[in-house]
Image (cartoon, rainbow, N blue to C red):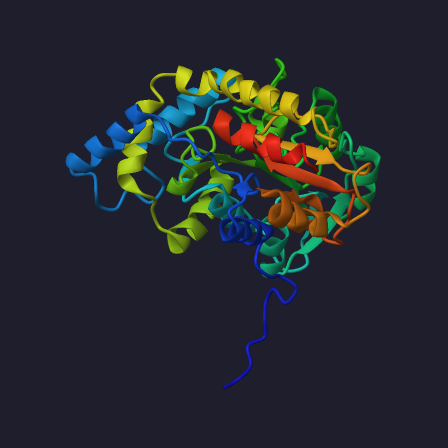
Length: 381
């Protein structure tokens, strides 16, 4: 048989799969992969059940159920003052990762350069490389992981096609500020540079901070794919339903790929979410809900030898362990899982070069008793 020439020769199984599998194997508390261990709203589950009973079990329209796209457009205008046409500028996707892959596939050609900021969610770079694009990464450092925009300027040239942003950020839990937006706007002005803005944690932002969506800024909105998710805010990551918003000229190309990638997304869940979104408190109450969990977990971790890094958004808390051990973060994460019984993610997995700042990421989207048990074990470290 002819040997397969891998398109991603350096890519293996994701760190999320590895750590979750190890947590299951040894019976550890899984604070590694980002998913809640509590149920989604009974009301939303009932709405899905009703949609099934009402016959919404066949293919949804390729761009998504119109009622859901209309609700997304209304929500976006209410939150950010941005208008999107439900027919031509919104597509429902099989989760945020599919939306990201589709956007990159639609517009990145061989030798196009794409700027990403590391630590970066692990689906960005492989998708770029699959399209023949070139990843230009800029490493950020703890504790604040701020973007050095003067360095970004040095990366931009005639081949730069896209900048990928993620706010609130996974894994660092940082957010973009107005100063970042001003710097970004100045950099891309009069340039043919697109933006892919990963905003799946848009509603998980704390301490009264503002989510600086690309939709808030017309000059950025007109060049941006904005990716969002329903799995994160509605505690239903297994449903894999998200969406992408973009100007019509970009969304037209997006849909060309989308129709041959998944064609359409789970119909009854789309109808259910469309109904559920009519109550704006379903998403407006989320910052308070998750901030309570963040604060509870941080208070617990203060009893340990770990040092807390800032957490302004997402449902992740990062810590350093410099006063505990000199082990590599990957080795320490494995030992914590096997010996202490708490699984985390080593953030070196989010750097192309495996840069190790001795930082681990924990997910706090868990029941209080789960967090209590995890802290009880981590105190022993």
